[in-house]
Amino acid sequence: MINKITLYLFVLLLGITSASVYAQDTTQIDFEEISLPLDTFWNGSDSSGGFSSKGVLFPNTFDFTYNFWSKGWALSSMRNDTTAGYTNLYSAITGSGANSSTIYAIGQQNAQIKNIPKNWTSANGRLSIEITNTTYAALSMAKGDQFAKKFGGINGQDPDYFLLKIYAFRDGAMDTSAYVSFFLADYRDEDSTKDYIIWDWTKVDLSPLATSPIDSLQFVLESSDTSQYGYNTPLFFAIDNLSYEPITEVKDYTSGAVSIFPNPAKETLSVFSPYDAAQCRMYTTSGLLLKQFSLDKGVNRISVNNLKSGLYIIHIRDKNNFYQYTKSWIKQ
Image 1 (cartoon, rainbow, N blue to C red):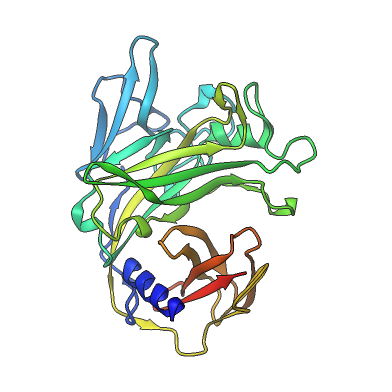
Image 2 (cartoon, rainbow, N blue to C red):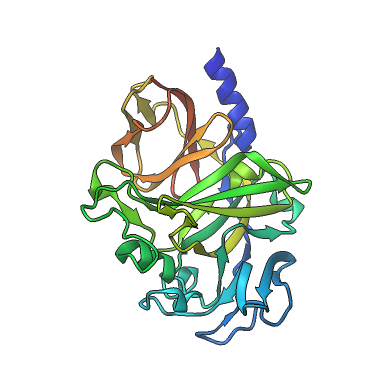
């Protein structure tokens, strides 16, 4: 009975009914309406205090005493994906915005997005953002530099990571009870062939934060590479395409089309999918997103060895958003 109650509450939290979800009429902030010449950047040196797109605010602070961008966001159309170091502060490692667009934003530690539209924060829609590394951060982690180590260390076995946590503000206060995690680099797996640095734009689902109205989003960076002065990894990242997609009704997977086993699971959870490229997300019962990945057709074996014992939720959606599957499972 406890599992069924928890699953029911989680389904309500995500706004997933037996009719499921199909996205349409996307509202998207892609910065392309802002005028910015190619291979340039804007960092707030005009004392404007930030910029806006479709009413959403991206605050910025420029320190005129020491003449540097000290807080918040910068706009960029830079294409330099090869020059290492802090002189190349405003470039995404992709060399462009998402989907080869021209303009994107660079954020730093504790950057905030404010004035999120109230109709964007609903259980009846999907809030998402595309994220990648900056050239500065990616090359620093891949090769090391005068301040930071090469991720993995000399023998490639160091369990390094570069983590972005995204928090929501409600009524002006940060909600610390839940956040969305996105690893910009992750070398923690015992199998070093699974180590990675993000080199491409990746869509991150923010819907678990937006099941009730939010005012703002805050982006907090963490790294395994630290010293007495703080983090050594360059604390910068790139964003594009902050999007809200309303949803309409479609169907659940038919009984038996998708399955997970064993349940309870100890080290590996097997997921059977009838389709290629189905999207799978794993959550805590409070709605915290733990893992997100794509499934192959057939049996997929997912390592859950690093999860604590307890109850979790798995949610699967086919790539066309026609079908979904939600089930609770127990980690021993």
